[in-house]
Length: 240
Image 1: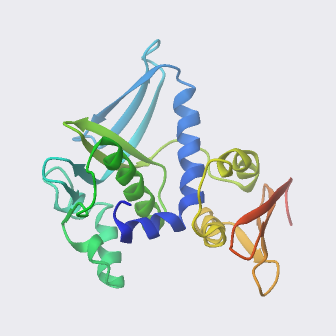
Image 2: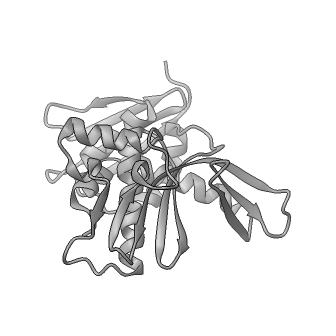
């Protein structure tokens, strides 16, 4: 387990986050073998094809947090020397103050006492932070960047990616769902629709299913009594 209070937020946004991360991976894979470079002064992360440096994806990068093994702590960007007090990360602080979530408004979080704090734990925590930031800000994708000494920085990116449509989700979700554990899939579907700006209709008062719709098509989810997804299908084409 990483930071428990942040994990619950990340779990809500898990489907939306996974789809936006998938879109980023698809875009960077089209570059082939590539590198990434951060320019903290310009506030950018650029992905560049090694075979052809003219092929790039330039993103506006918002530092959210750093997670370091030395002090065994997470430092929010609004309290970081290279962060901005009024940057995007300040929205997490405001949410924490409003909701009484100390993990979001304390400037530095120590690792949980039972945390290994090793490379894999820090990488998992970075994904938790990215998911929580997506849930609160509605912005995605994020990027977990290794910056030396085992430390990772988490950025939310304004990337030149297509908007997330139902049609795109219908294509990607069967593959994504096969490898994604959702503690509460019903809530994750509801939050996917909220964050993507789709219309959602529940099948009945017991929430045994949900249909999401936008101009590109519709998708139907079916849930069992434990809120797990047990069926998914979609229909493409403009909807009235």
